[in-house]
Image 1 (cartoon, rainbow, N blue to C red):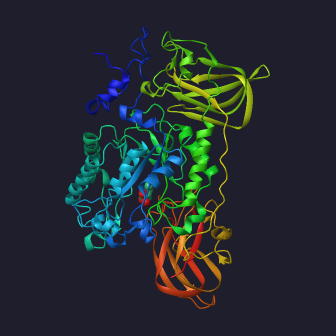
Image 2: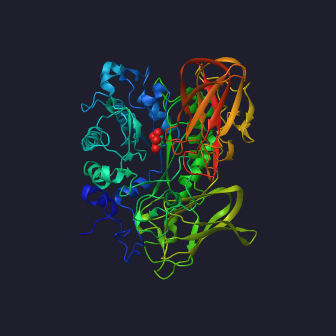
Length: 638
Ligand code: FUL
């Protein structure tokens, strides 16, 4: 039986994980190149072509102003006043995103769908008098808009009494099945790596550590998802379809190979992948449009700008990974207006930039051609199932585009035909400038796609792709050129939360290392960076709030930017003073998962306080590091 690729995908369940090494064209008389190295499954190949989608963190934390809930929150607190799934999906679409992955349950254990397996769920919330189903509403809105739908389900559950014991695994698996069977087709199922620590655990209020691979038996859970949802890509333990890119800043490595060794995830390998490694385990590059994953009114002024999102596009999609951009709804249950404006500006810029392939209609020639079905012009036919290739022994050929007339362009997009593996190791793109070939870019790895953005537009009529190094003949499905359109700037707005204190009049009184002014500049991209503290040599900083103020607590924002060798503080000790002379100990504690979830943490004092000075002590980094980095410290009213 001969199957083309489309009927292979349609064949569904059994074949979804099968490697794709079939002829590009049944009619072709020349045999296709043999696949090289690892290749994607049908579901992975489909996932690669989705490229950009939204993450939606909207759960109990939205209403408690936390990033990680302890698990003891009352369901009565979940009460969106104006929830609108269509508005959320429309905002994602404005941002050119092609799907939505919704948090169905975060670490605090509160379920946003009406499961009967726990009372800690939306049935016991005031939302629609307990008759609501956020998962169902978002799934339906996605279908209406023709968008993909996916689920995030936290394996860690700080509410469940049995977490850490076998009974919880039974509960967790039942939830996987509910979510896989009630809401139609899913394109992705997201399992968070954050796992184990302190929590409510049914009232035990203790710390529980687990050995995640042994506890969950991930291959069996991945298989459970696939048994119900054959085309859903699972994220991200070993054995899953997709891997984490290794940071939450939206930056894939360059290169970023989709292949990885067959051993548990290593963060340093995850960012760049490993060339020639045996597993097809491609990276998803996730980040949030705001510093936090959840909505916090004190971050209203810190939404990424449209230009910043374009840079994120380049460091994710442009490096052959998928973009997963978190857009958190506010307490109404809508994407804030400011975020919508920014998404639209970003989406418009991406749509306009890639609307016209300036190479359309170009004459295409190549140093070598494999034969009928693999002609050079295949790189311009807009079909990801066709490709240009050469005889097996020609591994460093050249393909030339003649655009018929001179064009001005600054974006170049290359794509490989992934069902035959990642074949090109290193390549260069050159333009004919005044009769001489000039190198515009040289990189390792094309993979799903490589988008090259030039510093400024160049005018040329002829350009060429030179494969410089490859273990096998190429299979190039696209070589396109575009002229970028810059996004329209969106001015920042002030915080919508009257409780957030402005740090405008604040100053640093003293600090154990220079540069502490960065803590007060409202910029998450600048940080106070100093040698890592120790219990005997803690880092200290004293802030003067300008006048005695009513204080409900403080906030601490870690550096969002990956700073080599630096980490945020593990915990804090805070003292308060009215005059800067006599001090009262106020609070001491740990900052949950701050090293990985690099978002603002808010710590409430035991009650309303009044003070003019706050003094902080940090005696350890959250993970071993040579330096401590903190981007900001703020405060809020009681
Ligand atoms: C992390 C979590 O701890 C964050 O809260 C968030 O959900 C992010 C996407 O993954 O590991």
